[in-house]
Length: 483
Image 1 (cartoon, rainbow, N blue to C red):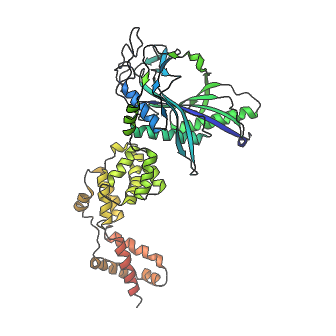
Image 2 (image 1 turned 180 degrees about the horizontal axis):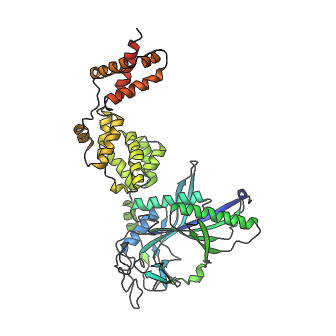
Image 3 (image 1 turned 90 degrees about the vertical axis):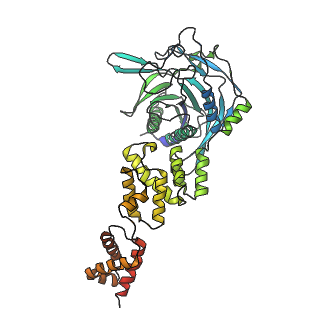
């Protein structure tokens, strides 16, 4: 068995984010996903001779926003280049991308590991480019080409080789997606291909400075598959070295069904693509004024929001991490707080009941039926001792089926908590009289039997008795029977 402890992995990720613009990067064709194949195309994205590209300004804005959010330097001038290679689903036979002079450089993001430590991951560059079309191989001996995706704007985010494990790669990718969705410039859907990730992986002995031979891994369509594929490739490279074999620079494809890697091609170098400046596109100029305008439009980003939730709402770190994991969830939580100032209860309801339903039903938060204001109202009903926690759960389930406020449900179903001492004392006396043996057990020191009495009283009042009042009255009544 290989001794993996003496090696360390060196990992860099190339992430392609499909931008949420209405039209393509160099033409006015729609970027809508799921349209009839080859319906969102024109002479420009089909590469017809004589057609000329015109840059979509939104693509530049979105890329600069991501650069600012990831601490990049925004270059005043950047240039588009032609990356030449043959793809059946790229009609021009070259991709318009950026090479020597990208728009954003030298950034970083910070990830937080499971042990609580933080690590800064460098970002080499972020640049703009166009997407290729899609080859569909589900037609027997034929391959069909859908060119709708051709020309869809992409942002490529290239990390420094700072990642040292599959876990770090997963956390880095999760943080990138979080920032992209907070900026509302990419939906982050790996399954639909709007977020794609390639990993460059090598290994070396711990303490060694020189990089090992790099292998690229592609075709990972979920965050977990990225983690699994990287783990598998690290194992494979260690086994090869331990067996005295050579690691070959190549591109591997990850098969999620088999959870294994398969060779695709030998890895090209940059010069194989024959980059040269695109003669049809002017340099992109981002003035200081434009950059500052975009900087001022940045929303509150995840790390800052998490810190604010901890400081302003006195939430535990774990709660703040969950609640700020997505922009929609953080907004839902804060909408609850427009109705109630019980921050911790609001957090508990979101993290347990709300997320439980969303995960069980596999729905988006937008499709969740209960408004945040109604959750806040429900919390207030509990705190005002109008209903118990148990009744609140029943009201919550009722709200899932009926679009009504909790107040209306409580009134219609007569669920108001019984706090009247006189009414509760009568019920307690009946229960104690009916269970003399349990009364004696309690008086002889078996205090746990009080739970039995509470259960009986809740049953008799259909869960409407105020638990705090019940416990106080029960103890008084039981103690009075010592005499």
